Length: 109
Image (cartoon, rainbow, N blue to C red; front, side, top):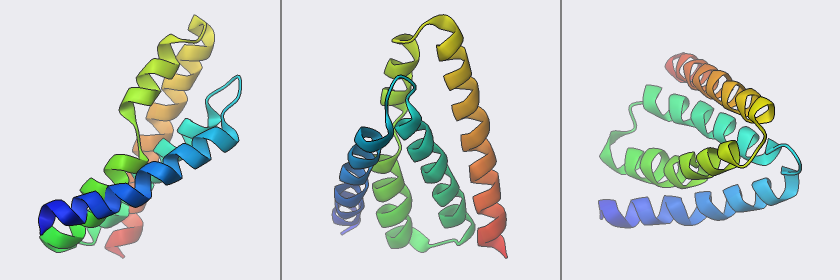
């Protein structure tokens, strides 16, 4: 059952990531920056809520795992000139970690 919950969450997260990235990406990968930041925030909320095995499989591993993308982040980082890549890596790291902490705080209320 857990595997099916992961697959169901991923079936929603992956197309949503693709749609947002396509809509927002341009010369700077704004779409993936937004997706990874938002996904990290949601991940923090879900972690704080102590969802149990089924809820975590669906929302944490499935949805957030498919919604966010480290591989796209890595590829988009190395495809850009060094100053743009550095700004992208810094922005993604700071915003994603901050969003996760904020999500945790919100979820713990």
